[in-house]
Image (cartoon, rainbow, N blue to C red; front, side, top):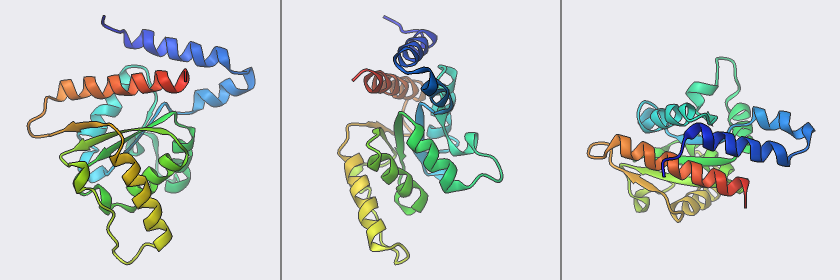
Length: 188
């Protein structure tokens, strides 16, 4: 049976809104459904950007830094708030993902806040992902990042090869995974 994105969004919205007191519905309307964690230089114009557009077209509210932030926004304030107010996270792992302090910080915050996360391994195998110590990050942060990365690596996710993969199929599978997880998060 083919699902209508508008019908699914309507179902989710009505189910959530009817279960909350009126004072909380305003806060809900300002939160995002999905936080997309990614290394911009690797995936912003491809996997992360296309996923953002696809989810937006389905009536969901994804958060992608390049789409939801404007000049003058404080990076950590805006991103941390978006993560904490999101319902679930999508972590798009790429070969150089672990070189980014921001990516690892976002991933750690998603995991620490006990958000459900959907890993997408884009042109990389989970076993290839490792936090590296360049001597500039405190040991406590390295432990935090390593823990979060290990948690994500041992979470069932999607894999995608950008040079050989079917982009339409990938977007369909990723969107289905997001919708299924949102439904589960909203109705445990």
